[in-house]
Image (cartoon, rainbow, N blue to C red; front, side, top):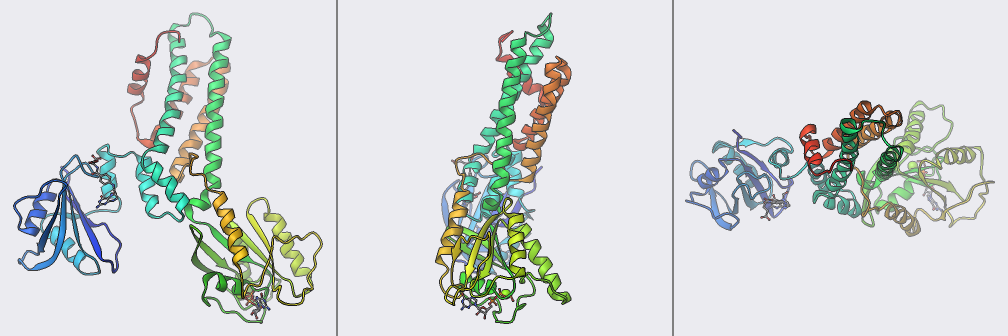
Amino acid sequence: MNETIAAIATANGIGSIAIIRLSGEHALDIAKKLTCKENFTPRHATLTNIYNDNNELIDEAIVIYFKGPYSFTAEDVVEIQCHGGFIVAQTILRATLKAGARLANAGEFSKRAFFNGRIDLSEAEAIAQLIEAKSEDAAKILASQMKGSLKEFIEQVRDDIIHILAYSEVSIDYAEEDLPEDLVAQIQAKLDELYTLLEKTLITSKSREGLMQGFRVAIIGKPNVGKSSLLNTLLNYNRAIVSDIAGTTRDTIEEQVKIGTHLIRIVDTAGIRESNDEIERIGIQRSLEAINESDIVIALFDGSRKADEEDEQILELIKQNRDKKEMLVVKNKIDLEQKFHLENLAFDLELNSRNDVTALVKKLEAIMDASNVSDEIMLISQRQISAVEATIQNIKEAFEPLQDQELEIFSFHLNEAVKEMASITRPFENDEMLDKMFGSFCLGK
Ligand SMILES: Nc1nc2c(c(=O)[nH]1)N(C=O)[C@@H](CNc1ccc(C(=O)N[C@@H](CCC(=O)O)C(=O)O)cc1)CN2
Ligand SMILES: Nc1nc2c(ncn2[C@@H]2O[C@H](COP(=O)(O)OP(=O)(O)OP(=O)(O)O)[C@@H](O)[C@H]2O)c(=O)[nH]1
Ligand SMILES: [Mg+2]
């Protein structure tokens, strides 16, 4: 028997409306108790008073009853839409608990929706991530996955593998001699195709991490080139201390800022140079880590000074990371007399970081927009990536047994691949599924 769960569905803070959600067989009874009402019509918004167990008024609210299975969880659901803020919703939640509900665990409504077959695991993951989306592009992808686009892709691949399996199983049972060579070649070709498709999906997914998790942008350079000034201008307020003393910023400073349709994290770092100062050295170490952890690196140079050995070291750092990161090489302080020159260093941009950085913002936006792949299939969690990697591995391990006509080993690996694929959407019974697929086949086909 399922307990009735309750939770505040809206964010904690001042807002005009908050929603308390109940799910389970006592949801309706609890709603009746809190409102002193005889009944609620399913899917009708009812304006009603809410009382505590001393019959004291808590709020005037709108209550909606969703009679299972026509609800998000497929159980009886009641939503109480009350006034927002810190107190009212909490008080109503406490009243529901007193009336017999228990506090829901994180994700428990979605979990119930999953167990009741309303959504699969990939859709549940999409909903969870949609709430935390860091860009409109990411939200678009997640919205389509919430409606089943990833599920359909995964199920198609899984069905394709089952189809191939069925081929070979039929051959085990009925082939008196060896498999015809062209049949082996046909199966191989189909497997190759799936292999390539999954590899491509993996690569797309990994390269879109910035888009999905929110881009991280690191500003690096030697001391005093204007990194903190750039951060402040991007944020539009004086977050970091700026001074003409080299080594002003000692720790990494991380802030969130919206650029175009992207919510990004921007990291100002300690200037990179040889230093004997212990604290500065730790800061510099963190700068190097910031490069590794970021998706985009802004490497800043001071145009008003002659290039020196430290600039060459930064150039070296740029070269090392060129293939791994999006790099923007920027010349700063162009309002001053220009003395900087370094062989083999070409600038993507020139600016005055205390003043106008629109060109840089445009470039950043273009880089981030370019990673939009709203119409491409991508995986959104490590769980999904691991399952696809395991699928690829099993497909690969099926190649040799196919050529050697060791069909049991071949089937074993493809069965594993099917299980891995199914684990992305929902665990399933292997035999049952195979039987079903078999049923639609004619022999020898
Ligand atoms: N007030 C409110 N707003 C919300 C939600 C909610 O639970 N409550 N949602 C929560 O995530 C999202 C909407 N998602 C929902 C998905 C399915 C059903 C639902 O009742 N499905 C039934 C009936 C379908 C129908 O009548 O068309 C079903 O699928 O059987 C409800 C909300 C966003 N907005
Ligand atoms: N003229 C001019 N001065 C600038 C510009 N950008 C920064 N400055 C000045 O350069 C000095 C250093 O700026 P910061 O932003 O503190 O430099 P930083 O790279 O963060 O330095 P560290 O934190 O020490 O690594 C300050 O005096 C700034 O006012 C610019 O575009 N033009
Ligand atoms: Mg600084």
